[in-house]
Length: 272
Image (cartoon, rainbow, N blue to C red; front, top):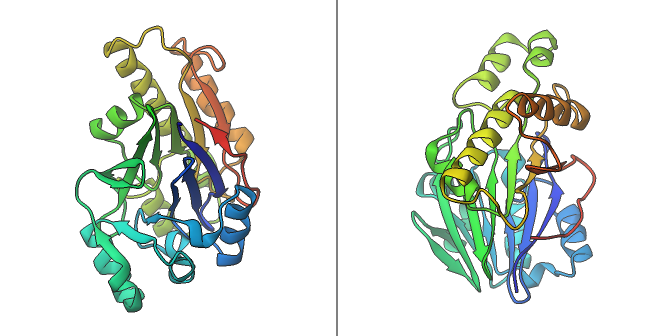
């Protein structure tokens, strides 16, 4: 049965992803206009009322902008998130309290097992998610200033990794952002740079080999996400990461596949 994944939107201006099986539809974040989310899910054959669950990574507006609207349309779909994020959401949108489910460990939505794990971001209690079904796994890691062993372990066991590559450090340093904002982005509770994303992929590959996956059925697939409009570009992200991994004898197309989730263009529905 397996999994399918689609990036509806990804970037500093708004984020939303869809993961689906033949019988289950899960939305991850709702940080863009509700109309765009509904159009995106519709192109994947999913009506808003068919959404079985909404996972929320954290309470920043670019991740919950249309949460109230989508949760109303997904009448039977619960909102799943961490305790701290649930508290923060209720402060912003108190009418959502009755639809919120707090999860600190693994849980199940339809035929999909979901495992949350902590991220390092300047939010109340941010989390990433691994979603598994039919022997396939998708892991989503964005909005984190540093990465942990737990994140790498989740990624190493995944068939598709959605990984933040927010900025190119030199572009950020030379750009127009105020000093305090630059410092926040570069901090341990900010965002992963292209260089940090390359380091993550390297560590993931090394762990896969240590776990005995030296000859996998196919190379791991990485979808770069949450790129900054001002401080990055798809071409820059791919170039930096590809070149850095080449120094470690990791070749794109041989040792890993890599693509980019775009800001305003909906991605393809990927078979995981």
